[in-house]
Image 1 (spheres, rainbow, N blue to C red):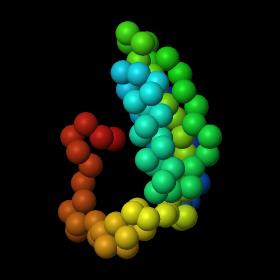
Image 2 (cartoon, rainbow, N blue to C red):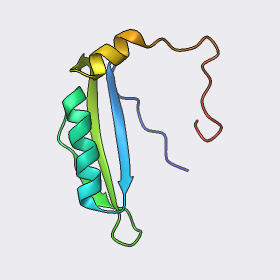
Image 3 (cartoon, rainbow, N blue to C red):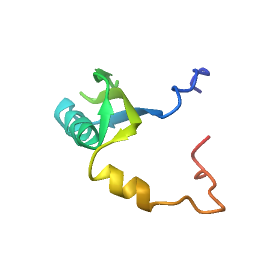
Image 4 (cartoon, rainbow, N blue to C red):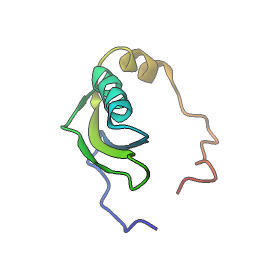
Length: 87
């Protein structure tokens, strides 16, 4: 179990990507940066056959298209509960 870490500041989200290759993780980071302002990514070995873990922080208060239109149109359901594997 992961140790308790402070939450990101308001309007920001911590994103963790685990991929089979560094290139696949970078592609995901690139897509996120096209949608949101983001800090520099940090990558680490994933501990599995050449896998990569990539961490970055996105600023959801500064969305770009297409995230802006998606965020404006989306509304969370009244019964918004985490999935069974989420905390």
